[in-house]
Image (cartoon, rainbow, N blue to C red; front, side, top):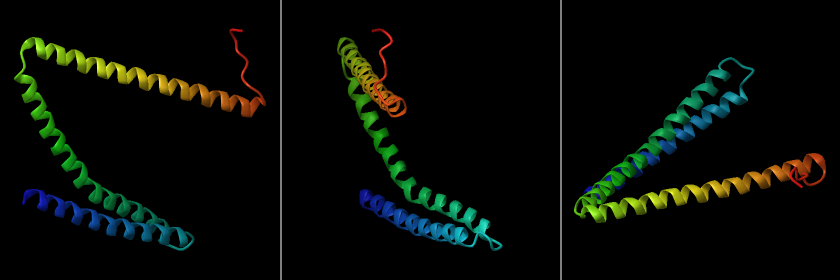
Length: 136
């Protein structure tokens, strides 16, 4: 029952937010089309404000429910960890730390390679050839 009401509430908010978002877009475009006339700039600003409100109304329920879900999962996980022996808990902490550090190292390497490739592409597009190796 609670899950059904939550899903219905989220659907209503998303639909209401979409309607407000469209109304804001109409105001925004109308303001842009009548920029030379009086009130065009105000319509543009109002349109942006209404679009922001519509997006917030449509997105807020999702993030609210996501936060509730994460909180319940975290409580269950911490309850499970509380039931472990100190040695087991230390092992779990070591595994968590290794996973976090490993993920950070992989992300760093991926970004480093991406930046090297982007730099080489930019240098080649500007200089007409590959970047000279300063260590060669």
